[in-house]
Length: 312
Figure 1 (cartoon, rainbow, N blue to C red):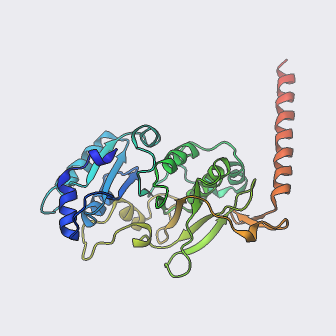
Figure 2: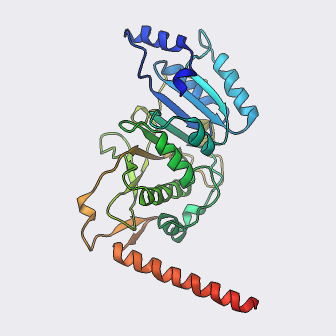
Figure 3: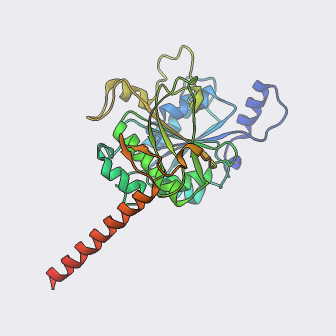
């Protein structure tokens, strides 16, 4: 329960600034893989009415985040930022009270899985419940993240400059919503937000539930607070994005995924001949998808049988 972690000073200062007499209901935001803490420190300083938790595995970076919270060119140390050293999955599962997180952020300038999402067949297998590559945001971590979210307003916000990785995350969310119907839904920004929807990833095994991939500039619409006249507070993500870090990073594009608690149904996708798009390729309806999965399983069983006979 992070309400017991943050200093009362942060609550009192925020309430005084916002001219309100109550100290309850402060938003709790968590950044996973916070790196050196540039983004988290900037957000905590520009949004004193909310609390931030920066989670990082490497101990040297955890210390730098802690140091930045004291040496951030502000009048006083940040009382609304907590630096945590932990592996993300176990932290969310064991250390965060369910239903308490307002927004959970992930900013990936250099994802460990660079090109897995370039192969549409690999994405299809994951969306249908197949094995995932090793990376931080696997379906188990995303499940733990979803369970931490506030059931009314909670959101998972993922920003990356690698479109292949963004596709992998989208299909991992498809897998999760297949396994846990009603847990999450993809946020629809509409046409006025400045966010351009570039791909749609459907649920292949059940009724309609889609995951949207957007391209745009992170801003207030996804909880990234902008700071006026900020010259040296750009985040680690921004610096690497501008330099085009990574062989598969986009220097001028940012890909955004936002998932909310709860479920939604799109009547347009319920017809028997509906088609949808996964990784840029049209996929057929539920019955044909199930038949394809059945044939795939039969081939796997046959291959295992043949291998067993060869060994004997």
